[in-house]
Image (cartoon, rainbow, N blue to C red):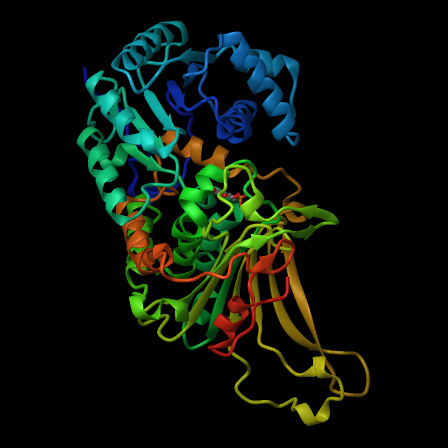
Length: 524
Ligand code: BG6
């Protein structure tokens, strides 16, 4: 029987506010539970939610994959993983023991109808055992090629049906990235999913949106009066977004050969960051109001003309090199990678948002593996002061010229915000120094930040899709990068790969890209 959950906030003044509320009982099925994500992120996040008392009393987690394992074996593997990958959690045998009672495992082949019959039967048993009330979340953490068969299997076994908002019991689906391989496949996947689920049941995960500092972008912009008046083409000279990793492909060579950096990082994580920096203020905190604004700004991205791809995009691939004192192999030497591979491990893009707010302001984004340092940041470079009162002639040292102000939102590793500004050095001359006003999450709050997966899984349990990508956002991002994808998959275009050494800041062409419009990458 279909009933409705009581509304979160009947008072219109409270509408859209996140109120503390415990999630309803549920069973979460993790499909692809034998994979790395389950061990490194999902189970640690669920255990952290349990420790924070953010899970309901009644819940079950059912890991599933083809590998044969008993419940106890699965619990053992997950216990080791939590201790290894979530060392910041207050792991205790007692709390783990209690949590693990809700952990189960089912060996099933989702390519066969019997796999779904077994899943359905097991969920029935868990409903009795853990009083899950029939609320189900299906977490797709398998190879993307299995997404469509799984969705079809869920439909034909009756495990998934289109539901009305607030209907109980509810089936929901969380889809890991990549959502499609290009625009066409993303649309096709979306159609398959929408045959079975309504949009409000679909949670397309982009873990960058769950990161604490990423959520803080909206707060910084829209809860303070001083930034927004400056946040436009009148005052902003350009924006730089950097995502640098020292890690290589970490055993995911065969996935990466299919994906490459543009699909793996830029289409989703980095363009989501662009949308948060570029969006207009939403009219409320209602999930759709925010997602509308994000989609709107992404639709303003200036299309890249296929004949001009090289003026807007640079690709790179790392060769062998040194990182933090260690010699590391080149991409082509990684396991699962072809020794002739032309797949990019680095991308730099110049893009423009063609709207009233951002007309003419270049946004530069770069992302790469095996770079000199692990860091992700957004840097808003403001225009220089209109008049050079402290002129160059007065100053003997180069550093004493007034430099533009830069507001940096550091996403990781150390989450924080800093503002660079000029100040006078003490003494008899007008010598300037550039200093930073720094805010660091860790020292300011002194509490552990929840991981992105904790926040996002909890939001899904609460039925809040605000921090998940909506179908129109995903499609517009694929559409934007399509000319670059097409050009880079054209085998007649030569690459000079490997074109950067592991441990460097990427190919020189990326410096030329930004220099062509008069700018320079920040030294990080
Ligand atoms: C994943 C990519 O989505 O994000 C990985 O598939 C990448 O290749 C990872 O390493 C980076 O995430 P984070 O949170 O470590 O910046």
